[in-house]
Length: 352
Image (cartoon, rainbow, N blue to C red):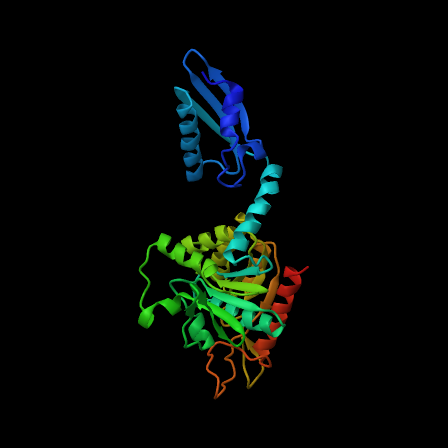
């Protein structure tokens, strides 16, 4: 018959599936009771997160250990560890997770650009924010994580494809910004028909199998809404910050609030809101026409308890004969100057 101290000794090395620390380290074994007449062992275990598939696997592991060592039946109860214990070990887990994603570079800061719906200019904001950060002297990369609607390569005028060197993907560099996109791995703009898990693995590969080098900022152009890919990114990057893009239209702002709330629920800090297509300014009269209405960005920022980083009008980049980049605003372009202000605010928030 197993004794209490033997049970504790057997279970001490078992690891919490979320904190990756032993139950001995987390003091996760809370109660052990034994009914000798039935050879029944009952254990209460505290872990980092309850009611999950990982908890079920842990339950099977513990039951297996105890039955193998003589228990006839095993009863298990789970509870969540205190917040201070979770925070103590979680920070180390997150740091090691992000280090492994970026090949040991823990200095890279992650910024996800999200929206509630498509067509609000989220990818345009991503590439121009990346360009403006680069112009501020930062080393910048972009992951086009909008798997179904990848557009970053076309927006930046990228025509070449990545090469593989020493089993690592070398990202394409354009205007000093490193880029990886699903579009690089699809022939003839074919539609993506993969299931969620396969897409999740591809996103993982963009972090683990790409030779990003020494980056200051890595921007992620997320798919619109709150689907599987956005959730994968939230779980992969615990310390990621977010920029939410909307138009002034109340409906776009209302839908964008869902993406913002998802960020808050996963402890991602929202850096601010960018209101795109805020107005059209006539070159002839100088008057502003609010094509998509007014106030959406401000209302969204208030709902998410953040600020409006900038309001971008409708205007095309300058045409350049020798440079093909349909969505990149030049540094001296009025909208390029607005992006410069937005990037400066982002850097101030990220590095404060």
